[in-house]
Image 1 (cartoon, rainbow, N blue to C red):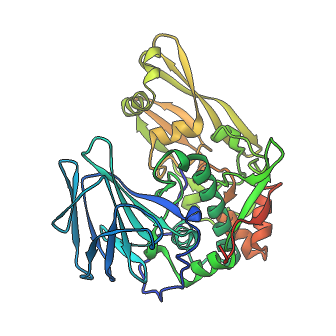
Image 2 (tube, rainbow, N blue to C red):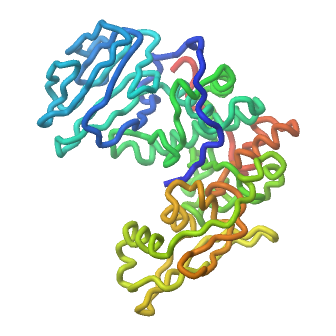
Image 3 (cartoon, helix red, strand yellow):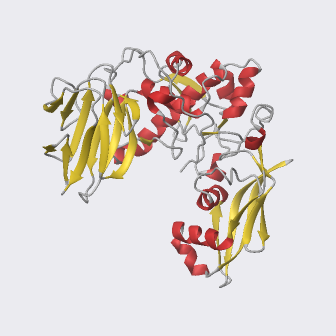
Length: 409
């Protein structure tokens, strides 16, 4: 999991519906996991809905149910492995909802663009809800959730390109083996749907339409890569190999003198945080059962770190048990195991101290994993007059930008 952190809240606002190219090739559409392993949900739409058993072009798609009433909540439940939609039993293990123009549906109180696919899981006891959406509407809901929309236009454009690149890399790398491409949470990148949109986020997305970052891979090809980003690097970004274990030329650490002057003090420096030792041990053993072989956890220490002068980011943690045996974790994996929210233990730029019945984390700095683009740093560069291309080339050195698709797709 990436641990990307949203730096801007989702804003509710009235929007003029943008022109959306719904006929862009389906291979470019994004499949966003909205709900995971649920047995019921509530659906609504301001326009009529067609329900089909498959996601295909209209001329070959067969409508099984037509829901003409608008703005009326539709209860969807799973009973004995079968879906009930507005009181009607739906045969089959999946249902796809196609709202009429303006192609917006409301799921459990939140508006999303595109279509909705419900797939019953193998156990027949739950289903997943997946938003099928063209890339630009998806990205309009990402940029506004990952950055405040009042930030500089060039920072928003840089975010749009980085988010588009990351999305298509994950889609290509993992999406082929599952029914969805990305989650809507910080486990991938935050997607807020319509409520995260604004005219400024749409402008950033449309001005960069189809543009992605590429780099030279080991086989000599020029391809997209996982363009990670995080809130506040704390003064220096980190090598991806130390955090995620992958290695791409643009994902090396670079100095960042830009975020300290822009980031809120509580994002750049964070106070001491303590966690109960028993709580930490329980979380570690649940996440990593193989640690049981070392016995009761007696010591947790940093054994490796990246030294950037006044900044030192922990990269490897040693865990010692009562048996005398030891094991190791990447510092980022350890951090997000101890604090899965990432909102207390904000980064691995800190010191670990044995404090009676607690593990204390002192001298904290930055927020997030620190790989790739520093979002507050991008805003700082934009305020200094740098454009999106300059921002991206700084945080992703040796990368280049290409057009992945255009208006004709």
